[in-house]
Length: 147
Image (cartoon, rainbow, N blue to C red):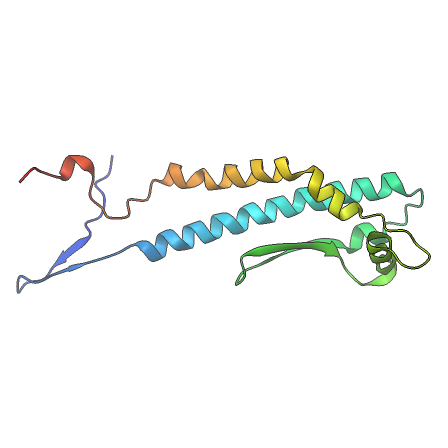
């Protein structure tokens, strides 16, 4: 087992400085969250496409191609939706409804039905933090001596 990196840097003149790896740990957490959101988006988009074409008999594929998810880096969130391109444009009206088209809400129903699946995916990613075991302060319990 490798020895953890020291958190204290000692210079030649005898002064010392504490070094923190909090930035690296925060980056790891952020990337694990983004990975979890990306996989959740894949699952939800696939299940939405299946539920959409089970509901409607016409299989042109336009709404399926317009369905997507976007994981934003700065906001660290995910958006799932139907893009406004081509004939997928009409999928938006079937989702939210109009005067002549009743509201189907298939995207919302898909997300609500799969909340347990989302939790499982995100729990699996965040459990990776325990596998890496980042030592925030570099000191283990055995290193401490009673004074």
